[in-house]
Image 1 (tube, rainbow, N blue to C red):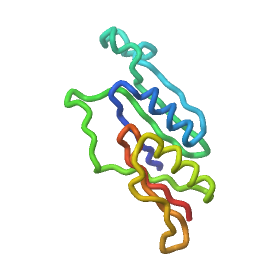
Image 2 (image 1 turned 30 degrees about the horizontal axis):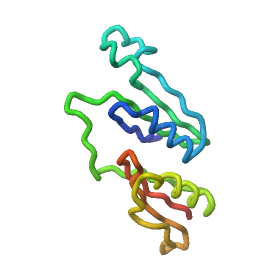
Image 3 (image 1 turned 90 degrees about the horizontal axis):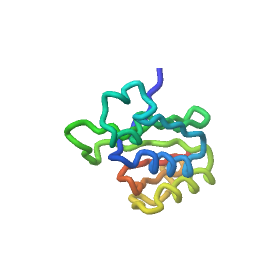
Image 4 (image 1 turned 180 degrees about the vertical axis):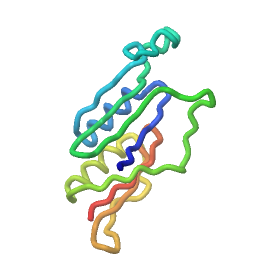
Length: 133
């Protein structure tokens, strides 16, 4: 069993997932409303909205969508995405890229086990914790 993160956006899923691809690498696939079986049931203005986006790289999977519920999109601090990096170089690169246009909440620092840990909120309002053991 695996758990994958799924982020909801308000019309800018393609922009966000393309940004994350630049941060993490990998391949990203998009399916728009216009390409989906539900296309005929949804309004014409939604045809370019993303139903499902998937970014994957070596077991790393991040999913996203523009399909916001009727309540609208509510951003908060209840969810933080944790990413385990493989090297000091990788964590420093990902931290720098994710924090571009966002906020460096917790600068990279050595933790009690000798690894690196840090936290950012990206330009889309998502919270990330980066760890390298």
